[in-house]
Image 1 (spheres, each protein chain N blue to C red):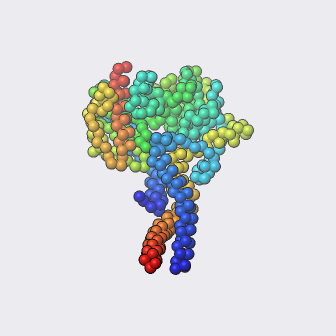
Image 2 (image 1 turned 90 degrees about the vertical axis):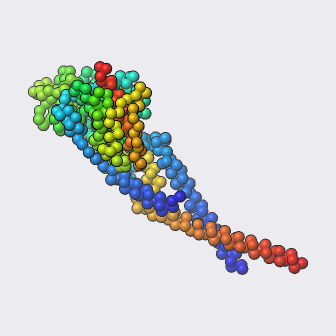
Image 3 (image 1 turned 135 degrees about the vertical axis):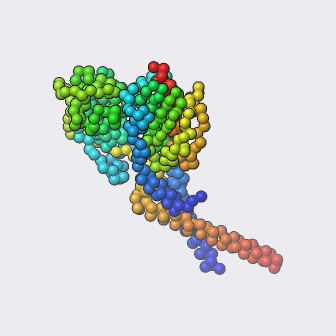
Length: 172
Length: 259
């Protein structure tokens, strides 16, 4: 049980950490799209119908923030730039889906004060080749990172949404 | 012996006084601490408090709303990173609006670096930014027939869906322009658009004492000191009372034995 003076110190450190939380751009989303295709294809949009909104709400635990999702596709490959809040701030992540499997994932912009370890390739490699199961789960388990639980969970949800949207876009 | 008893009583009295003082703070810390441990369940992170006095207390720069954009039945006002559409806050953490246009059943709001598309009933359809816009910064937004028009330093661009854009030559474009907010409405709107502080941030700062700046830390230091005094006085009172009772009991036994 920490003493009050410890609480004051902990609070101060927490607030200090909060104060220095800045937007970290690890890769420009435009560069991520160009890298995925070599060139930049024309964007497409996917309107989220009521059933799609309901399914995304089931995955995210809250309704989607927008009714139309922009994406880029060329043949079997599609790219999705998605945002989800980890604890307080949105994390922007990019997903390249090929043949219904995640080809690669990347954290593009990170805004939370803690948990940025999710940007490391060693963590993101776990998403490679993951598919969406019939109950909208990832086909493979993703190991968490101590101290980054909420960010890990946010990325896992985004990966499921990306796979779901890719599946949806192919039905159109 | 009398002096010792007097000192013990004095220590006990002050122990009680410090105890009551500390109890007020401890109860407060316990309640706020429990609330902070469950911010997500209580949705404290989502609840935002709009109050000019609180914003001033936090030293946030309060930008008074000056202009409004009217379009058909809609009225948009932006200030302090928030938008008020028909008296309802529809967006936070957003830049100042440059204009608003209603076209083909959608409402478009432009900022210098983004275009926000809303349904007429206020649902966000999409935020378009970066290279999804034809050029940056956006200088103005308008409509020409069914086309949405964006004015940028590199020219005017037209679109019907905010997906594909084409350069257009200036023609009969109705540009959205802001007008000054009536003086009588300014105070009310300023209160609605005061910078928001999340309930979690406020509670965390109250809990740590940081809400009072450097004084908060001093108050907490004093409380910590009171707890140290309480611990010491508690131990002293306990052992002194224990010894006093033992001595009294021994004296009683000896007296009984002497009879």
